[in-house]
Image 1 (cartoon, rainbow, N blue to C red):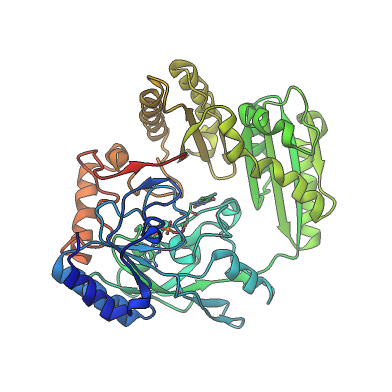
Image 2: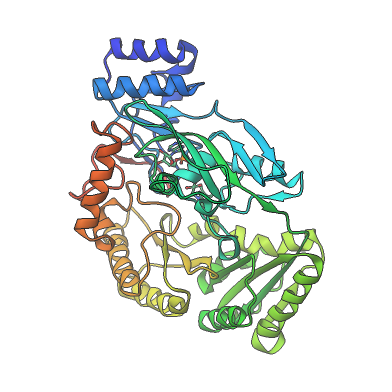
Length: 472
Ligand SMILES: Cc1cc2nc3c(=O)[nH]c(=O)nc-3n(C[C@H](O)[C@H](O)[C@H](O)COP(=O)(O)OP(=O)(O)OC[C@H]3O[C@@H](n4cnc5c(N)ncnc54)[C@H](O)[C@@H]3O)c2cc1C
């Protein structure tokens, strides 16, 4: 609990109009998209780097937690103030500072909504490819902190591939620039990469220099239904072998199809056991050539049905199948735990078969959908929190799943981060010596452990003070 004197010092730094320390509004900053929640003592909305620096210096001196926060759309509890303290909401850092068409870079503040940046660069025929499905709500700062992925990662990569440099404020108050504003630069250790994906535990990001690319002028959207996941994933391998790297290559499995079937404005074959949504882009000629190759691989005789959108409206209709999956899964059970594991592309069929085994062994539905192009599968464990045995079985499935994934050479999280939800499992993937090295890095940045404590490292396997509220 932060005492009144310290709160008034914080208020003095950011201005009383930019601090909340009581009332209903405070509760809005207790949780993120996981719906796990823990109350902060206060929320502040700093307006300058200097204010951030002063608050962090005070936190290091007095020993209270500071939790950076973007839009709170995180899926691993990263912005949840598990140990109370001050949530530092970056809402006022919401400016696109420049878009440089000669050098193909943009400078932005971290509170900019990802979709706003994308639209601004596309207006001048440039392209910022990372596109998490939360694009209309998430912030660029949150994307940097989580190294967000997205649907286009198969062709264009993830957030870290577009970050050239950062301005950061250290927990001890120093403001430093990392990285470069050029296409090349190797001076010293790569702090930019270290901060990207550090989940708000090493520094507060206050400025971001992004790499842009020219905007593709054409795209083609296609949908194909297959009898089973194995034949759909075979088509994915065949596509890659034919040198087609689609912009988007999404799959959904049989139980996801059954959940969305009635809501869809497309003909779904009765025997459909898997669906692929495929998008290719480039200039008009390239997009058309690639679409032909996709048809060769998943067209008529290879799939149960295949459709190409003729215009944007039709493409939207095809997209609805993928977009509706996540919310429609609650038809299966009232509670959901979503994991975002990754396996090598060639092991995906084996992994999906294993999900069927887990589902039968523990008596719970385990529908899967995700990014077939990069092996990132969203595994959804559906259960009823009020039915005896189901929550326990859900957690047994998580452990068995992670063991399998790691055994296949994969990772327990492709884009959502460790946060608090996966902290108890980190040691399954990273050897103890690796975790200890990471802890020493954390200590070098944050000697008093005030920045986003309780995240990533949780060797005891326990998270205290956390409440579950509602579906997740
Ligand atoms: C419907 C839905 C779909 C999603 N789809 C995807 C997807 O396709 N791909 C994907 O990768 N993720 C996805 N996500 C997860 C989430 O949107 C991303 O993790 C996103 O990057 C979080 O951004 P945010 O602004 O909401 O950050 P928050 O949730 O507010 O914070 C996330 C983490 O970033 C830290 N942080 C935030 N701002 C800063 C800053 N300025 N400096 C330092 N640390 C900071 C926080 O402390 C926290 O640890 C999805 C979420 C939802 C709800």
